[in-house]
Length: 127
Image 1 (tube, rainbow, N blue to C red):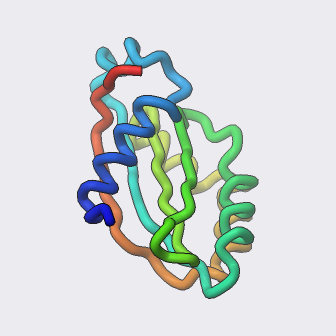
Image 2: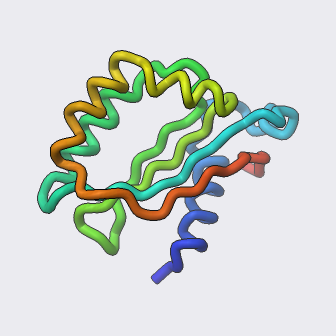
């Protein structure tokens, strides 16, 4: 079983290697990038519903380079979210978007809590 720190490192590398909508060469010259990696839990049996709300509410966010949701294998109601943004301001602005606010409102009743969360600075990598 992976330790949380190893998982976060692996998730960051997966984001950089496969989930990025920006060519990897461009990342090395973009010092303003901002990333988040975090765990979220749904109330029992509601994980897929939570995922559907998040996926619907996070399309077309200006400045978002990647938004990857993964099911936690060890915890049936938990998910991991790995995000990469043009900069921290773009992430902050996304929280005011109508579709993001709607997703938050739908998800709130089925949220059980939040786990590990890390703010990161993506630095690039190899594809």
